[in-house]
Length: 354
Image 1 (cartoon, rainbow, N blue to C red):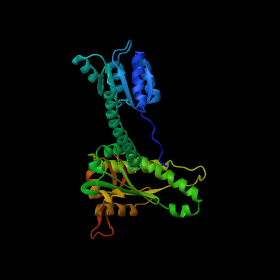
Image 2 (tube, rainbow, N blue to C red; image 1 turned 135 degrees about the vertical axis):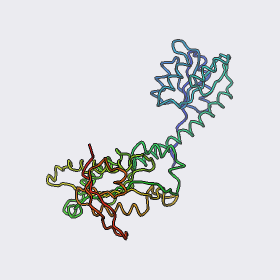
Image 3 (cartoon, rainbow, N blue to C red; image 1 turned 180 degrees about the horizontal axis):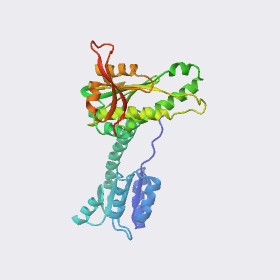
Image 4 (cartoon, helix red, strand yellow; image 1 turned 135 degrees about the horizontal axis):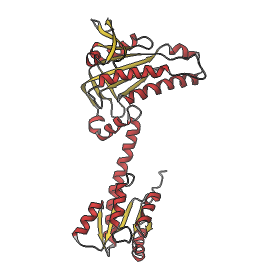
């Protein structure tokens, strides 16, 4: 059975008790939950504790005016979009302009008409319901994308869904990184299943954190390895450099990973990196899609990873040409790569030029 929706909660603020009684009666009869306050500070306290869906706010109150209360509401990130209707006996245009400047959404003149009050309340609550639904969807999207990209990238995707969430792709220059644990499979076979998972999770946490720190996108886990890329959905001028620095960061941090239960266990990783034109975008169906990259340059990066030894970072000439001068490398000559008639220039990354 569908859960019963709670009644909408409205805060009425007025220093005149009789006015509060009239407002409360009208709203209660319309099946709203009504909260009341007699001054500005009390109103702000109720807003913080009870989270109303709308505020009916008297303008002329002693101590703290309705204008100031409204300004406080708008200044608070948690309540900046809370609908505010100002109840006022003032008819001068300048007074209403002041209310708009303070952040009021609507005005209602005193003495108010019951039907007009309820109509304005219903209208603003419909708008708030649409906004709340959108915010909930955006939070869900940010949570889901937060599994694959950093918070900044997730916010970019949510802010531009027409660009990032449609099926289809585009050609773009990206830098693709493949990384894989060396020799972990035979080790895992000797461990208790939960211990093997714990070790793998420690490794994956380390490498994913490194990808996010350098602004990359996690494409997928591949058993005891990962695939990531740099340059989409957010591109940076130094994406090839970011990818290489990410690889170095992974290798450095992996040296410090130890396990109390297995003091002699050390993890070693092989990494391959390539830069080139690929197709990036959402591939799949409306029911299931992956934001991923495809193309021959992706395959080259994977082949380089498979040729990398424990603790080694192999990059192609395409990547090196974009970062040379900033990294120390050892020229390995042409590397034979499956699917290529000619060898691909390979470099072993030794460190960053300081």
